[in-house]
Image (cartoon, rainbow, N blue to C red):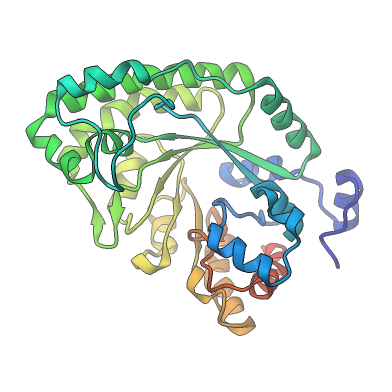
Length: 348
């Protein structure tokens, strides 16, 4: 069956034997309720190099105009991320990747007036959110930086890690200010649009585990999450943590502060979602499909789905690529991946 037919959503659901919208489906899955099929989503935008290659290989120009148009072209359930930025265009930018924009409290005082602006989305964008939600084939989530990520953007990677020991008072002051701003974001979201879930961008782990110890997490991150996560969940918006790398230890820490799920579970970091589901069956996990097999042919693509399907049946796994699809994956490779993905989505 061609699942990319452009027909009204209500008729499309009837034709496919589906009775849930994309929003209803993912919300039910997160709550552990029965679903008609798995979501067929990509949570992350594609690499620009990947899209450029696909255009050379036959991807229509109109399909490459946006994440939404790409998702529509491939017949995916739409999955759209809305980002609330704590820094503004007036905030200084680091001179190079990984470097910082502050070194001390005086620097923070200097840039602070450029941050923490009132969270706002344009009326046009809000109307688009509502329309695409009502269309029935789009999942919406919003993202803010986490309490590890946000100070790192100010200090830079190396100085941020030193700050836990060399500048703890400043680090906590930054997190206090950020917490107050996040409360404004939550209030604004509650008045504006019902997102299906949200995520904190953290990237706290790498391929050997977390970049800080449990004591630092408990002192510098947990108190802030313990204050803001209940306010988010009061809106009936599930909370996910986005952390690359090996999250085997971190998943326990974020579970303790109330997170409902984590992603993207990068296969190259050696993670195993079945272990996390066994430890935390109340949590939902997103991603975990090994992007490195997507250009290896049909047998390899199917083998990866076979690896993940037991977890999708036994726990709460939303299968998706474990990060952005690399440029080595051709346009035809990706179309094959989506075709097989749709087949497995009904095998729950």
